[in-house]
Length: 367
Ligand code: SF4
Image (cartoon, rainbow, N blue to C red; front, side, top):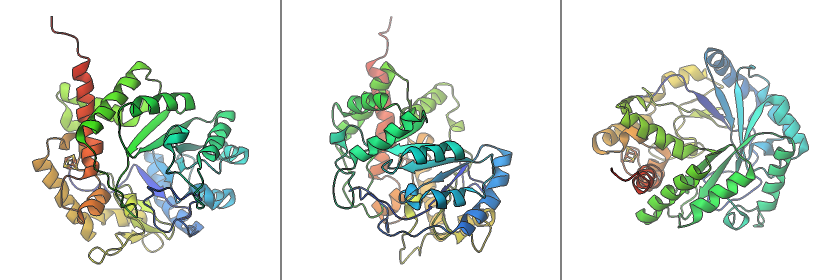
């Protein structure tokens, strides 16, 4: 894997910067302001995306702020320029989902992913602007999805991995009825400066326990565990070099104003005296395909690619990880050409070690 691909497998779109919640660990700047994406931005992105979606599977992920805070009418206007082959996804806090939104998702074939951190007492960080717990409103939204028989994914943030938590979470999400689950150990990035260092043994035990819970009843696609098992199987088959893509997926994030930030959505909206606003161009001035073709010339991207090479030559986990995420390097290390971060320790290195620990603990005795 070297360099950045010119064609992504998905784009992230920010229909509004506004969020109706104020979660304690949120990385987003401007989430109290309603800066909405104008329709010409969506038209410009669709001009590039529609041919890509005709050639192969392609997704648009609507991610805010809270994308539903843009309102159904505006979101429909932003969806309109995209062709029928494009798969749409929305990442939402679910608090605004009602029957009308469920009809909207069905009509526009939008796949929903809900952010919820587990049972009520695990959602203390998910609060309204007035500081009141959002859990009941989140569940009302999930109930509406279930009543309309709309399949949904879930994304949970874990702030403190601790014994017993993984089993509790997995059982909760089995009951909730999601068919895909992603687990993010909280990251220090964006405007969230909370510490994300943990006792390594706790993090390894968390992942090992999650694998054990999943193996007992593997009804949910558990994102991190499936990544790890795919990698472990490739190592056993001697094809580990084929796990990573040939080139990095640029994952362009299209900001509300049309600016394009590659590789890490979390960098969008930030500026730095050294790196500027991190954007590689704006779709209102330049076609998206042209911006992506030149993305490697964005100064911070070149520095990040040097960091990926440093990872390749120094880290035994590179074949699984591929060099980590740009935003974690920037927000933890202050630059892009470093290597290990707390994020990669928590979510790559200790994830793989947890899966291996589970395998060691459950291997058949030698005969
Ligand atoms: S685990 Fe960390 S140090 Fe290793 S390749 Fe990934 S980002 Fe680099």
